[in-house]
Length: 178
Image (cartoon, rainbow, N blue to C red; front, top):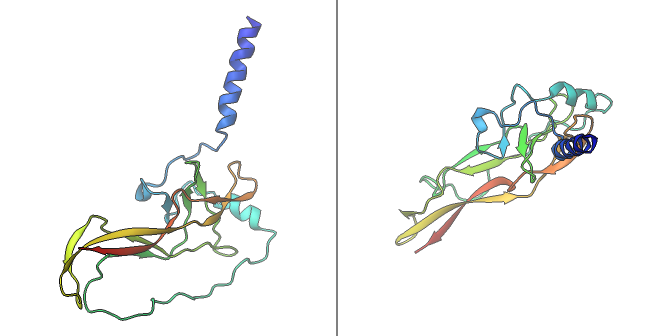
């Protein structure tokens, strides 16, 4: 009987040690359901734990606006690939291991703000484009960057880095074909 108890306890310990992440909240907020990142700070975001870990650091950033609209012609028609563009802090990501991770954000000490761009439509469409003599098939495709976020460790005692699953969408590219 004691061998059976030992085997059962060993099996349970092994199962729990494989997934030792906090179980407070294991899903993105409803506004970000099905996505790999979220600009919405959920009620479970561990702001106090992050601020506690940052308290011994000086300000790690200086607020500065360095973003502008891209250079180039300003056409008088709707862009072939319409996109949602955002420049807000990202509070949660799904990492490469499919785990929910809390991105380190602090109003007073540390911000990670990345310009994201998500295509509104990714299905092929046939459109006429000014200055081009005929209609073309257009497909809008996301372009991604591999970005390393500073995140809170699963046990919330230190910071580490993590990559977002699939990369961060930073551009909606128009692909043209006949």
